Image (cartoon, rainbow, N blue to C red; front, side, top):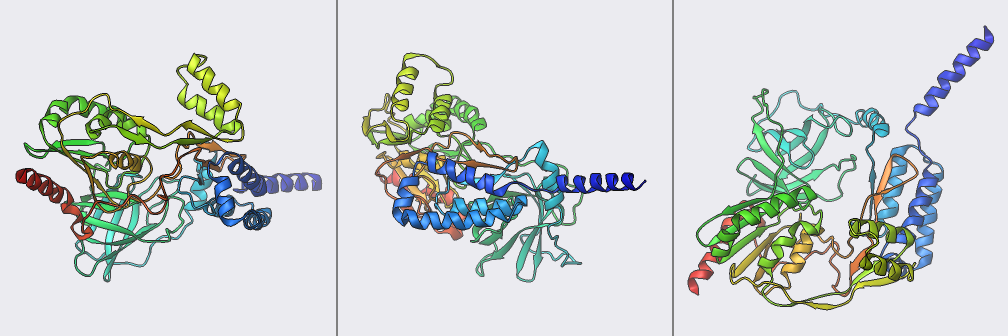
Length: 468
């Protein structure tokens, strides 16, 4: 009987041990740091800027922390601190969602604090039930004194749950339609800086965070449609002006963008003006807008050289990404041989070159690219191309600044199922500092009039057209 008791005790304790959300943090940090040192395009440059001894001292501090922190969330904070040292918005680590980790995340994040401060729900101009474009969450926004709080009504039940506070709104003193929002990331880490927001036509646009559409009032509990997924849109604003809106450049948008360009090509070419609205564009794949480029370029343009970190791992990922459909042809074999001869080096994939457009269209003659602080990565890539054209003007506010490195290629796995990471492998040479600075505008627009920017740009283009 006593032996049976100890056997059951061992089984129960063993079950508790193996059900804990633990990971080998030192193993994961060692793996991550080795991979960054081997594969990150700017590693040598970043070390040179701060000195190798400073980096090694910092890394050792994180290693010491990793030795005594094996809970997945504590380890995640350590891994994130390590990656943030490089100050590269493309070099990131995040929580990986899989069938193994979902239940663990669900158990852990469901215990995060819920908002219980209000027995009576205060009404205000921003109050209502909103659904987010980026995450699909349903959020209830209610007033609290002079501010507002957004709490989850319907989350993903993995990271976010009902009644948890997602963000806090601080309207400007002049007008509730603009102001600042302090928000939590998907992993419940509070963002260090508040984001600007604009509210118009029942849509709350939070720069560099998310877009929320009002679907019901507070009193209306019988809302039905939670979906709000924006796609690329094209509108003919007048006989003179076409308008393109791109929320992101994820691969599912490419078919939509190409179809719109094909369907409306004649109408676009009839009109002298084109507005390309990139506000809050969250990036994706630059190939999505390839068929838009002929409308932009009006002359030959010079492309800067493109440099690649030719590590063994990067080479395999690079060849799989760019030569997947043409393995063993002459270009593939020649390129593979060139890269393998330069393992461990920084190599020029493309040297500085003059690009002559195949076709130059007479119209549209004037193009405005509309930007704000929410434009990142491949959204900035389109701005970068626009800067090379004589008929493009950038208006709005400067972009976020996430462009000095590129070509993440694919998400990289780690020893633990809890984590994965992105590591950029390429950079454009001699383009100056863009990260955390952004592409500055040619014409700055007042953020207080954010909801009227398209009309302001349209009037600007059409007034200029009349003068000519």
